[in-house]
Amino acid sequence: MSRGQQNDEDTNAVLFDARNEYYIGNFMGSINFVLPEQGTAGAELLSYMYLSYLAIDSGRIIASDIKEGSSTPLQALRLVHEAFEQPSRCEEVLEKLTDKVAGEEDETNLWHIATAIVYCYDGQFENALKILHGSTNLESMALSVQCLLRLQRVDLAKQLVAKMQEISDDATLTQLAQAWVALAQGTEQMQDAFHIYQEFCEKFKPTPALLNGQAVVHLGLERYEEADAVLRESLIKKHNDYDTLINLMVLSHLTGKPTENITRYLEQLRQFYPKSDFITDLDKKSTEFDRLCLQYDLGAGEEKLLAI
Image 1 (tube, rainbow, N blue to C red):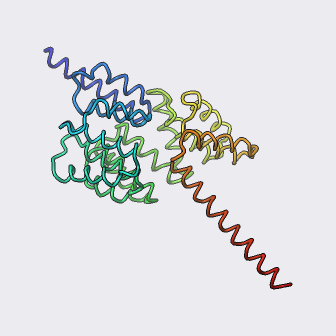
Image 2 (tube, helix red, strand yellow):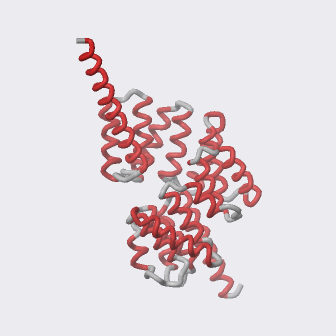
Image 3 (cartoon, rainbow, N blue to C red):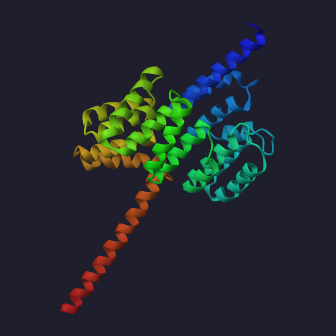
């Protein structure tokens, strides 16, 4: 084997590992695979390191490493970071991203993925689907599955997963997409999802993402002790994990735990994720509830005056 062939195989092995660690939610693991190769790595390998930095709220590293206006396709991830840092600029960032997608061939698929990520971040799932439509890239297809599930189109998500299985049934993303759809379908399919998450925990290592997948299955099948065990394990791995805190709130409610337990998890969510979808939606509902209560009280007071 020539030195060039050996280097190619080593690069492919690192890419495989970095990609899979990113998919299962072991973001530091993905970063650590890429860092030793950073000086010579191509855009595809580096993208998993930078996507992982975005996932752990360390996007400023991207802004430092990738200079504005550089020709690398990694510029797309710099724009994702800008959207995350300044949500008010999402429209401006999306205009730049969509111009790139429309104007140039996207050999790495990074511009399409980045554009879809920002659309999803901004709640524009239909537009994300339009950007990804027709792609046979598994990452684009998996992101499309997530968009369809957010839009409550489980039927279309299931069809797309079937296409992913035709391309590569054993691929990590295909297996994960199967699990997402199985969870969305409800109790009859949930055990299938559990087996996928369990297999990945054994094949790779347990991550909060995989453990929360198992927890959702346990919650759906009313296996509360098992749900508590995996959620506690997830907390050990990341004490403030977003999904873990939400699932612990659900578990506390379902098992009749004191209100103080739920409040504690909620306060942690407010502290670490003040602008998250969960907190934003909860606050909107709380404000609307208060408004309706006030409206009811005013109406009741008027009725009493009329009675007098």
